[in-house]
Length: 288
Length: 273
Image 1 (tube, each protein chain N blue to C red):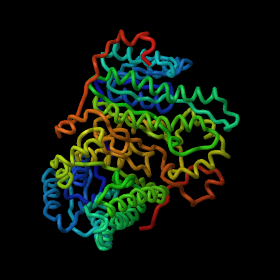
Image 2: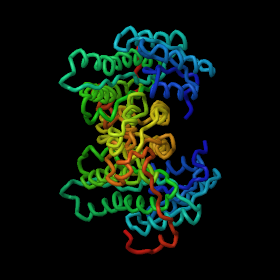
Image 3: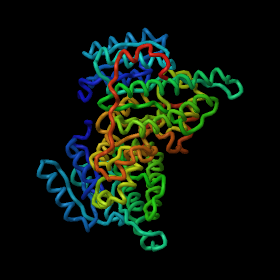
Image 4: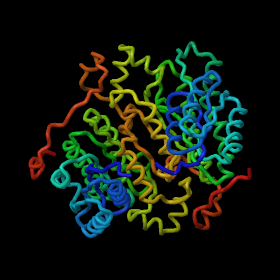
């Protein structure tokens, strides 16, 4: 991809999953990193930081509550003090607790919004100030397929992710004059401890997979690739985009090969075209 | 980078603009190419072919009407005969027309749909049959796939259909290991847009709807197309990436003076630290 050498990125939610994968990819591309994660994830965060540092990358970790303004101020300050600049933000920290709507409390709702939306807003604003002062940069935000359609038992989460999509668009418009591009990815079902539990529950996964044309869950690295592309100069005319990385989940669904699904055969249902004969293609008339 | 070495691709609408940029980029990354252009575009295709040869690439031109299914068959046949395989399609050929709704004729509409939709469908289906080892396809949609623009009813309709070609082939071809995705360009500096870009009265308003305050370059769309074709986009199916400088995300409403005076793109603002 290129262009990340000696550039500086803040990655929130960096202790596992998509955030960790994105941090590792950015490190491979030569970026210097501020890794942010919740205090409860301090141990994993330390592991990621130590592994990156052990491989010769410059990475600093900060454990703090993303919903607290002091956390984003500290992250930006450390970036400037240590590396002298800030170029990119991967706005990835988020939670997705499951609960019946009628059992949700306002405290439950407030906490999800505080982390998924307010935390992203605070970090983005603080970072954008530093990036604007230095002449530009790029951000990517983790939205979700749930930014656009609701899933049961995740009302507060769905609401928070719709807000994230609109936050990304709003910042794209607001920060375009400062040469800062802002985009979002909308991941579908990506392998993580919580989603892997769905996959191992046959009664859940046999239904879930019927909604994913790729017929499998995504890997965190497959999100990281898109994050890094959107941050790169290869995406120089892409801003305000929300990019689905969901194995086709939001495009539609398949309606065939139910037997395999019913049997919860884990392997994706794949087919092969019959052999293609060049002579068939020539002047074969009305196949179309 | 030679991510596409030993692979073969068909690029439609290759004679200029986004298609030509995508073809050059794929050739730089090692792909063998069938360059498909309109019947009148012989010279453009020949020039592109020689540019690609000059960098050591392999390309064969085909100037034919993409709305005819025989063209799709011929393109796929060329790929199989010349390169023995087909891995990627840049399904990009398209036309535009600006006419008031009551001036537009049914013939205009049918021609637009024939090139932009029927041609894309024919190439996609014929190519998919030959992509036996899987592969990837990128279709050129538009911001007009979901936002209407005055005086281009036929174009908007055709691009709306392209959006659904992307989604529905995205899932239809998933079992065959073929990923289908789309790009939705906004205002890109190509032959299709040059008259409007030169029209100050038009452009001073158009730019007010583009947060990045400039037209995009064909290379800036080609880089997204190539990303979507690459294995980096392995979990993307039926997805459409707007490449529009923020046009479909929203709009700016400041710095009107520069726009009114038709000044060059407003220079980046900076912020005192």
